[in-house]
Image 1 (cartoon, helix red, strand yellow):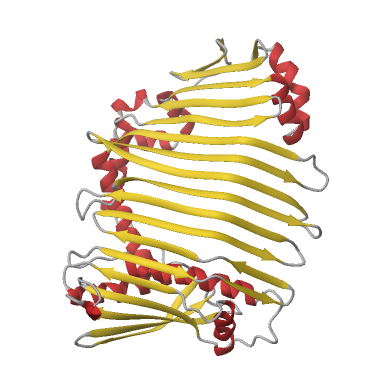
Image 2: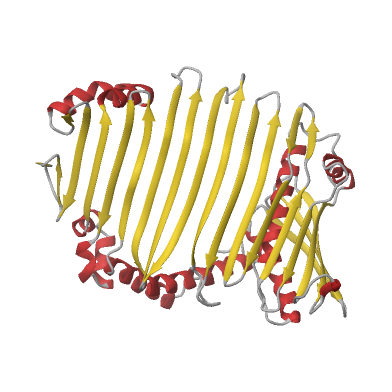
Length: 463
């Protein structure tokens, strides 16, 4: 049992933080399974949740019990937080109270109704958690539909927690997750704040949502979109190695996948309204409208689906034996190589749609695209040969990139990030690596058939 009064100053806060992660892990375990029959559903829950906790690497199930009744069942997992063999592990208890369908608890229609409870085994620590939450209890409730789909609602009440000079406060965390052929998720967390002698951290306005649609139960890929937004994140410290200030505002991160015929297209987008950083001994940095937009298109669906299935099978091996490397058979290795070749032969396209930021003197933008026109005639045999000589593989590629920036903005950026590079800027302009177009510096780069050019000038060498 953990003794609070003798623990070092930082022990209480990490324990609470890890406990919150395991609460979310319990949620994931409660929603990541499906089953068409009630008995199978309960067995899936017991095995899946145990495997997921063990696979995390930061927690392990020390014992598990499952008692099935006529109208209800109870699953109890005793979990140890912390890596195996390390001192300071914290025991917790995860309890799933399951009411059987088709009218579970006479509260809904479905296969089962599951209420999940997470508590610290140490009574003193659990009391601290309850006090931090003001006597209110977190809620994790899952309804398992008659078709095996799941709908989970979770709530963490607002609270505050202090431990030897450090304090955490947070506003209520709420969310919903549904799983099935059509899945969706939503999470909202208005504010989380940490104050300590070393520094202060606050994030506010965190929210996320997403949808996924699958063709059938065997479809491991699906299509859909996800979005996460963060209004602000601030950090400040006046002492120690982490001394400095950091501010991020108006973050939006998202992804989208679509299916066009027999090919997948996927996009990843990050947008930051403002990013500011102050560190001792370095000039203050302030960037606006920071954007990173990437996309991968023309991914052949069939080999990609087969690869996803193989990796899923290997993942299940890891869950069953977290400390053992998955055993990849010769047949699996050959299948993965053949599928990788099929993906390359379909000639996928990687696009850097936009990497940009705005300085006071203007916007700096990089775009680019990578294609594999030479991959159409690939075979498993010459892929193995190319893997032994990666530079030769560049002969298959066609690359294009364009860089544009106001000269003043580029000089300002280099002064902040790499002052020594500013001295080389004039030399790059004289050599034609950068050319002036009005107030802009531009570089058009291309690579094809083993030869590259910059602004139309051939680069030395080749592949």
